[in-house]
Image (spheres, rainbow, N blue to C red):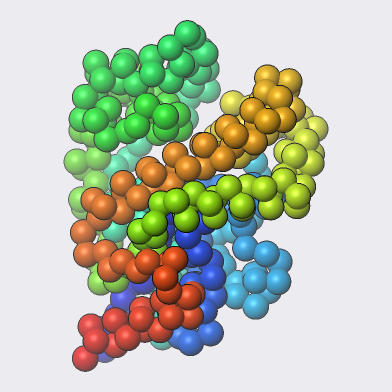
Length: 314
């Protein structure tokens, strides 16, 4: 009997991925594996849009709450963690379902990832100081363009985490990350992957959902969540976990760098930019079956995914 396919459910922020995964879990014998670079962190619940405690009780997700906020978590870590979970699910006759919005993790799992150097705090500080200058992260992007034009063409100037990592790798190894990634093919996943994407066609509706959800996060206590994180001695603004969308802007507000209105607008704008980057990733992904989550309910999408899997197996 061939291995069951891995199921990808991916999409931009606020597109309804968790709801689809929960609906799928009701109808299919599967294991849900979170693909989210912020939801791995404990005590970062509201800003990361983590599934609710009730959802996690009824529909458990692997790879949520597995790191402290001061620890790092990379695409390589994800692949190392997800691989055994996929194998265990298949061995038990259950479909592995990878659900989330961190597109780099999906790509790394499918295509493999090169052996990258660990984070270097001194070099990261140097890059951050570069970004603190008059030109901001555009200065970092310009420097990356000089040393690794291939990666610079793929990374948006408003994507600080990927910019920092790409330039850091060059500064540590003397080689562009794009060159190191060419060695990844030997680590790629060998089984079948069925990819399903939530792709809202109406951007105005998606942006409205993003704005509404950000307002809801504020009502749920996002600022108090960040304030609590700020009291922990190990946690500081430069950590990857705290540079995530929403958290970064909350830190700036609590530090007095933004007023209330600026904070809210900056948080919503950064979330819209994240969604745009996620949609760009999706457009370049091969074999991705798309559903307009503004027109279909979570249950309808789950039913279509099951039919597609059945058609593939027939």
